[in-house]
Image (tube, rainbow, N blue to C red):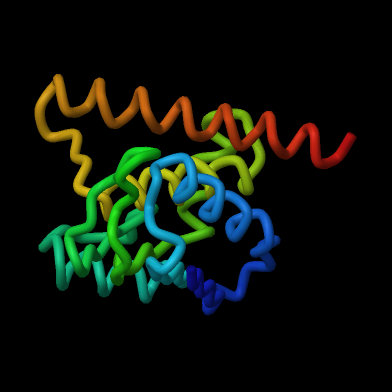
Length: 155
């Protein structure tokens, strides 16, 4: 599995946290160990350009996902095939603002956004209420599992 993380945002981020998170989430979702994903952290200007170009919406956003091979989660018996999952683009500056409003650390917001972006790469969406319940429920489960793993790792 190749997880490439590139930080072009100018904001120092502990990329190893995002790497561990993505590895764990992909394992939990039974995605092939031969799947590839890229995570790019960009500044507000770059994110705004992408947001306008791909979503036709003004201003920077927190996360964008660009799926490639349309992979879906697998099962323990039938993992998702190898392939290129796609790209997750994060904006730490927007994440920081959202984290402050939510009362938690920026890295916690980036964990949420990375998990959210990964679920989009795997075909999840939240346009309809039932889709939102499924996606956000799975997102909460994945984040809780990661937080528990991190607590054990630090103990």
